[in-house]
Length: 100
Image (cartoon, rainbow, N blue to C red; front, side):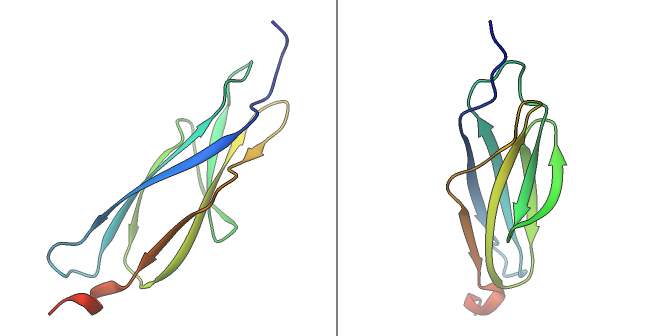
């Protein structure tokens, strides 16, 4: 089988809103790449275009405590070429403003 880089990457996010108005939200992010030979070496998580962290398995749990809009994407790192996710994940956190 010939060496081949991944054709695509995607980022999936699941958020957990705070239930006790503690000005906190958790975001579970998973980066997935299409099949590659050899396999993808590692993954980078980007927030607002800046590299946050690198992971071997493409999974992160992020704590959001400041109100704002955050744009996440991921990059699959491969020896034959890197590929960035095609669709961004936008997370908006209003902080404790909805708490009464």
